[in-house]
Length: 219
Ligand code: B16
Ligand code: MG
Image (cartoon, rainbow, N blue to C red; front, side, top):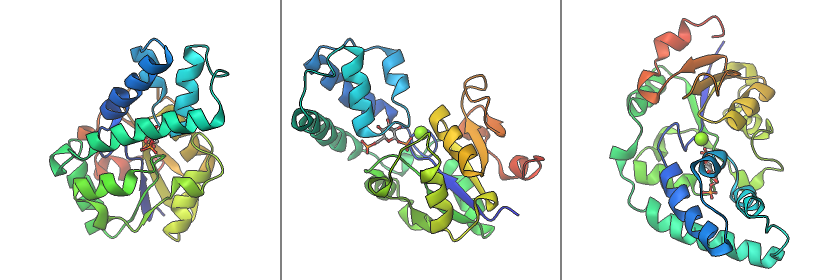
């Protein structure tokens, strides 16, 4: 029986990808990496340090920086990013998701956030939905990021549920792999061809519906 839902944040509850892109673009310019839409898309769901590594690799300069310099670049990006997310309000919850959260909460399901973002708690506060969740996974306490299953396994543990009792919602391929690897039911939101590994699929957050999920053979 499904008893809980684990939500990715960026791309599922709100769109912070535009702010990540804006902030990483500055870093890319600083290190001399050409900023492309493809590069931006590849950073979806990937941790801060892994994102920086991808940007440095794209410019063939991953060996030109010491650990300290990389930490500094990541810090600078995060300071700028934090200014951008300060502008978030409840209006920035993605279409349909405030209603979906209220519906599952009202029906007695447990709710968790499984985001790679260390800024997730501030973002949830800004969106006005922090109180709805029984648990928020702390990504700093994990050994491996998505696509490793650890983050979604942890989300189930924090809800006191078995993975098979949890549905995970994700917009990234890395996230869907993490949910599937954890033994949970994956819901993919976005491009169907890209997210073909998802058990259940919706084209956008506006389409996500509890009755459709409950009617699916995977439920
Ligand atoms: P931070 P998600 C991810 O969020 C973003 O998609 C990814 O672009 C970002 O690098 C990562 O969080 C870490 O964020 O720098 O705030 O710790 O999709 O897992 O909610
Ligand atoms: Mg995401």
